[in-house]
Image (tube, rainbow, N blue to C red):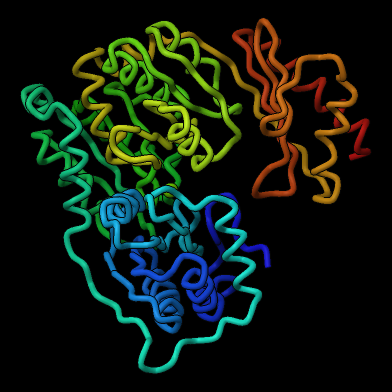
Length: 450
Ligand code: MG
């Protein structure tokens, strides 16, 4: 049964994602990623204890021991899995940025990276097969492990210039979205000597402050707080804190492609003016411009943080990420890491100037993001049809269809999560970006009859 989407298994708790499904997924994970032990962790959602218990029971019924890390960010679980060689897999119970009624199951490979599509398919196949339990005398045990969050924060601190950050006397407003970062990022900032004012920093799965997607609309309180407290920076995580976004000292929301560009520049400069940065075909040319201006190279991959992480491993890339606030630092670990992103942004504003002036120094690009609702049966073939129409033009088929022009680019791809066809068009000239998006939209309509 197809269960894994772009971000693991997701669904409304006790609707799609009920105990029966979670238990059987636990058994399938045991079969594919055993022999264990398997480390498990959860976010703050009301249903996370229930889903964690069901997955754990499934694992134990197959003879796999479970190490329960409690409530920690996804990258803290990933750090634990990578640094404990005896652990054969990790399972994170989270629906990241989805509304509170949702939950999810995300699988982590033994090297701490997110599972590949092949591993996910193997779990789906096992789910559909006979999953016989072990005998009574071979069932697994569960053991609580404390300190995974602290070890993770130690590792983040070991990678940054603590003295420089401490002596800068920074003030930060931090919005944890009542999610999994409540026991880690505030401690990280305190240990870095940063005066920290927290918001939504209680573990509360009702998300009373705002939903856990760190969009500009959801961060209006944080924007206001940064100005009122005269802070140097605002930091916000999504629900499981694998992502981080920023607010400037004047209260401006920093779009993810811009923070990606600024941190990419910092990482290349810290690497002596060289190194490869990996991002996706859907990311603004801004990143390429900024990275090449300081001597680095940019490689593009298909969309999805596991793809970016694996490419970084293959190529020896120093930094990577996507425009949604997912940032990967090769010197730390090959997964999105919200706390590491926050710590490195502190270094960036100390070394490269305050975030407002850094933002103002960036070239301006305009991106049109359009989507056409479409029958899923037609979606997959449309890329081929449009490619055929543009035969002879230089097209990139890495993920969907991308055309690069002297003054911009267009990306056409079926959505990974909804029955929609997405059209991204970017240019430094807003009218050019709009015109190209409209042209491809027309072409799509004519070909599909939608
Ligand atoms: Mg997340």
